Image (cartoon, rainbow, N blue to C red; front, side, top):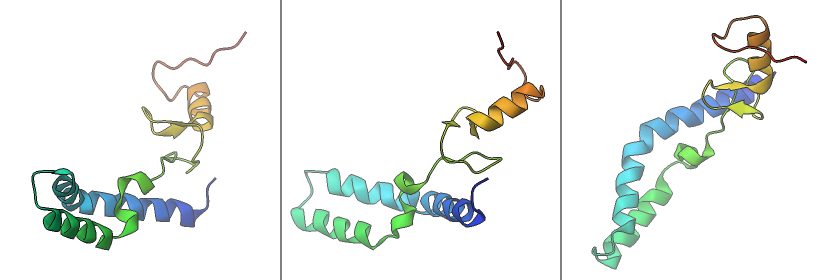
Length: 101
């Protein structure tokens, strides 16, 4: 089980990324547009730098919904490998059969 503080910090980053996604996308489009004057593009870079660092979607860590484990994460189910195995063994994931030989 991950520390509560790490799970909460990641949730805060997820909320910030969602909140600033539109603004960040517009500023990045201005920065990448070569047809605009260099002054406008540089101003957009400065505004982008003023945004909170934790509002970047790259800073969000994929974590298991149940345990908060950051590694062994399966994105399709949003669970870690250990949680998938436990839920699959108990028959709580439809269509998943634990293999044994």
